[in-house]
Length: 337
Image (cartoon, rainbow, N blue to C red; front, side, top):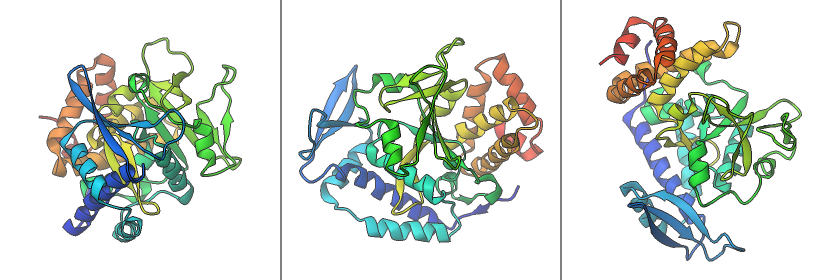
């Protein structure tokens, strides 16, 4: 598989857009916002307090202290909104061949970002996440692997429970800010829903990590103010998610799985789907594409993710062996130490 590497200037523009979106996320709290540092079990976390906030929830969670977060906070103190500049960067990146979601998906991601879903460690998973990897890795991805008609949002159950912050509105009310036609699809449990759909069939599914073999049909994600469907293997995918820019409007800052974990996870999931499922081939194609890109860009991360998955037990190894046997030899070699 031959992938076209993006020019260095385009890769640099992606990094610039991400930096600007990180600063904009914090400046959105308004002039005069103050930043607070808190210690928990020997680790430091940052919060922002906005003077414009009304009601009880004046402090919002920003994240674990990292050099990148500290730099972003400093930038947010100095930089005003630069949405038109970001909009221009988005146009440049799309013209360079990077993929963008359809307009409705872009609007949905935008309202979720504005509500704080990705700040609260929710992540975009599935094909919409895959669309962002071209910019992160510096390659043009094949168009056949980026088409989708739905959106998957996931959050680790343990993170949702641990966060002392949550969305102000219900997940459904937030989605209706993008399209008033959204409605909740009821589950067997009365009053619970993990899927939100429009009359023409567009769906947003909310997923979470499986805690044990006897999971209930749904788990409550308090931070996202919604129920979610627990899925096996999702904890592997959601570990150490990364920030990415969605090329819609003036850019949308989201979280996505680390590309190496996404590739290995798709190998596994491609074997879990039935032969007749059309998503099976796309899962495999996405995995193969990322393996080739990571073999050039970050081979260590790829091998590390693959080794970790194999160490999780015989069932994981069997699924991986089945999938890897279908890969071309260069891709198989990229997975081995």
